Image (cartoon, rainbow, N blue to C red; front, side):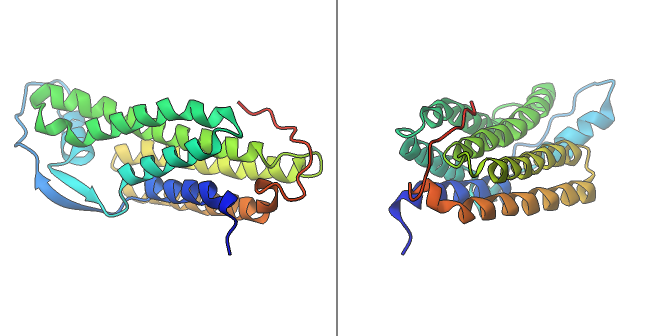
Length: 219
């Protein structure tokens, strides 16, 4: 039977999976795009037709649920590490940008749709990776003991590699380099899996069993 103290970490793991993996199906058409005069028609075409698209997509692994689970896990872990409470405003901001990105085409068109889509894609994508990275760093706070320091640091390195690959995947996908983005996504998921496996290996420290003095100072 799983220790109740592990519940927030399990919720956080589920949140990471929901936010990192997208399986989307179209549910509703956006209002038809209104072309406008521009000196960069190829960039406009890339953003409007590839980045934004023409339909609202429903994620079968919903990001909104991922944000909610992440917030719940931070609330549960906050009493033991105040840095989790500091994550909550950033989770709300990231969720706001994500919703704006999805719903923006219903209210904006022409040049405004292009500019908003351009900015929201990068802000939403990078911010999502950063909040996950900080949350996972704070998980490692509770694992860093004198005896476990080297093992914990290596886990952090795997997590950083995963997040870096995630950022690159976001940037590369923007330029419609789908296969290259897929390679980076696979790298992201492999190192993410290694990270969480190592966290699970050290779960006795998260529940307080055999835990020594916490020497972590991650912010």
